[in-house]
Amino acid sequence: MEAEAAKYIGAGLAATALIGAGIGIGNVFSSYLAGALRNPSAADSQRTNLLLGFALCEATGLFGLVIAFIILFA
Amino acid sequence: MSNDPMHQFKIEPIIEGRQIGIIDTTFTNSSLWMVLTVIAIVAFLALTARKKLIPGRMQSVGELSYEFVADMVRSSIGPEAMKFFPFVFTLFFFVLFSNILGMNPYGFTTTSHLAVTIALGLFTVGMVVVVGIMKHGLGFFKLFAPAGLPLPMYLIIIPIEIISFLSRPLSLAVRLFANMLAGHVMLKVFAIFIAFLVGKGGIMAAGAIVPILGTTAIIALEFLVAFLQAFVFAILACVYLNDAFHVEH
Image 1 (spheres, rainbow over the protein chains, first blue to last red):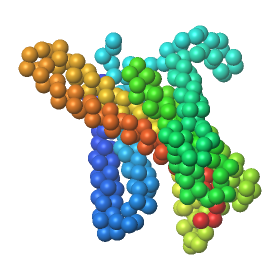
Image 2: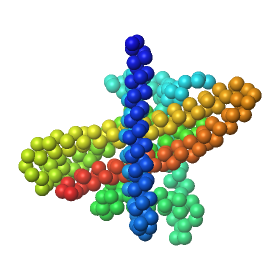
Image 3: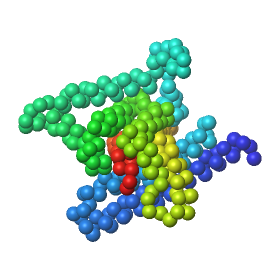
Image 4: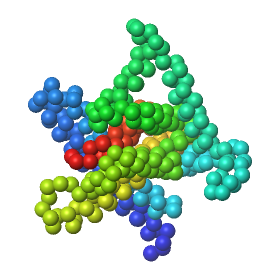
C-alpha cells in the first residue's frame, strides 16, 4: 500500500473518535432531561454542569479530529 | 480566493520585524486580531461601565457580565477567591471576544491556533501551581495523593493523578483550539459546496438552498460554541484554581 493511501485511511480511522463523542453527548442530555423532568425545580441549578459535561464530551471527539489533522498535514 | 478550507488559518506578516533572541517581533494578522480583541473588550467595558443607581440597558449588560463571572468564581471556588476574579474575567472575555470576532467575515480567529491557546492553558495551570505552593507550601503536593485510600492503591493513584494534572494545560488548549478549528473548517467546507452547486447551474443551483440553510444553522451553532468554549475555559480555570485553594477535598 502506498504511504499516501495509508495516511488517508488513518485519518478516517481517527475520525471514529466522534462515535464516542456522539454517544457521550446524547447521554449527557438524556440524563439531564430525565433528571429535569423528575425534579424540575432542581433543573436550573444544574445547567452549568450540563454545559460543562457537554463541552468536556465534545472535546474528546475533537481530540480525534486533531489527530486526523496531524496525520494529514504534519 | 482559495478553495482550501485550511487557508483561513494562515498567518501572514503585516509589518516585518526582527528576530530578538527567541522572540520574533513580526506583526502578523494574528497579532492584529488580538489587538482588535483587546480594543473590543475595552470599548465594551467603557460603553457599559456607568454608575447610575437604576441601570439602563448598557449598564445592565455590564452588570450582567460582571455578575456572571463573579458568580462562577464564587460558586466554584468560594468568596475568598475573589482576588482571582480579574484573572478569570480577563480570560473569559479574551476567549469570548476572539471567538466572536473570528466569526465575522474576513475575520481571523486567534484562538484557532494551538500556540495561542496553549499559552493561555500553560499560564492558567502554572498559576495554579504557584498559588498552591504559596498557600500550602509543600502541602500542595497532597493534591496528588488523596486521603483515605488503602496503602497499595497509592502506587497506582499517584502516577495517575500526576499525569492527569500535567495533561490539564494540553486538554484546556486542545479543547478550545479543536472546537474553533473544526467549526471554521466545517463552515468553509459547506460554503465551498454552495459555490460548487451554484457553479453547476440549473437544477443543481436550485439545490444549493439546502447547504445555504445548513450553513445558516451551523453559524448559529458556532456562535453558541464560541460562547460555550469561553465559558468552559473560564470555569475549568476556576475548577483548577479550586485545587490550589482547597487541597484536601
